Image (cartoon, rainbow, N blue to C red):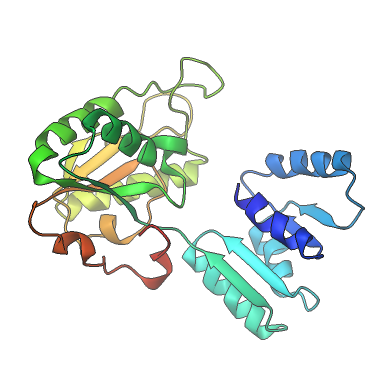
Length: 262
């Protein structure tokens, strides 16, 4: 999806481009290359590059003949790209660096519908989406009912091979990502966050993490400040019917976590 966002306007404006795939998910790029060839694009217009970020990505961001870099990923790598762009040819840079987007549920919401989409918002692709609804705010009048239903729906997930019809939850992308998610969970508990459910690895082959949610999370806690990139909902806050200040007050996140939808 993000690739097509970049590709379409680029070629429509008469440019050529290089698509560098994520090092842990390169196969979609190779399939895209096949489709590009079948569609009849001239050689050299749309180029697909696989490889490590520390090698292929670094070469692109510092190349003197590349005039624009668009990157979706971590804040740490985004900073490195900006530095490389400045040290080379001052190429233009567009960065999309994660988020802490919120699901906001009001008293007059269709409860079943709100629960369904709020669960999807943090569990689709195991929460490995930059626009995942990782914070949940619920108006006080339906808070208890919503939390009970949210918990029940989340725990219905069936872990297994994502290619099997009966599976509704696959593994996260890598062992390193699983360890990062578990580190966020453990730190959240240490800082005083209350586990509503989950919080453990799933005992089976692969990098599986339980669907997890926290309540009673302070805005200064790392769970609220940092993108987890996993199936972890944080906050589950109750806000009063007469006071919207809790929703309009911004979370004091590091600047590279602010994004559309936050």
